[in-house]
Length: 331
Image (cartoon, rainbow, N blue to C red; front, side, top):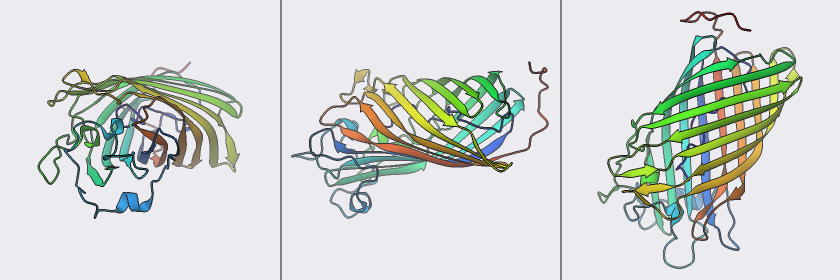
């Protein structure tokens, strides 16, 4: 369900490129497949026929048939279908710039590709999403080149209502609000990132709280929180290649979607996930990937269940030696 922060870009992650500006391209994917009822499986990648069949009756570029989330509704008449699904994909271009050794600015430009199927109806939306602007300050910092590291980052930002949130289908009706590339709201984010390591073992914690506004359709997503906890190992292969395998835990909560102040049944998000991660760094280039599968999910029998999510990205980091602002000597 795309109602909470969920990989919103505030996660700083593990990086040996401290104080270095850079540019990144990321792909984020999550899927919901299979209802929370006996004998229904949950596939991270629903069958090819379920995703690509555009000849189904009722196939549309979005749908106005159900103004609420299908995530909180049943399939077509009868038993909920195994082929029902929701897929949320995001392509992100991110830029990071250090104006001072401890102060960084970030901009995130997303392109959204959402798709769902309920019964014989296929719905989709593809368009640029909402732009996010972030700033952070490193209160405490020791680099990964030392045996001991401790780094604390505090930050905040704003998500602008730049994405289209009024896409209509072929019949002229507005598609479901949760499939829209944009939200139409101005939202505020606060986050903290702490990393601790000794020799080759490290722990990274990141927590984000998102305060959501209301759009002109009187839709508002409840304030949300996301939390990451990573246990990682620092490995090396030669002088230039660094390898960081990790075990990741993730928790997300939002009290759901509200329309004209009324809670929409079945839209609460309360989920814990876990899975492996891997970060590779070679010279100024980094590759990052993670996979998370559900461990606990608060859901209803009529809801589609989370099948999992993953992220993959590539970054280039500049050899920055000059900054716009001078900084005091670090302790």
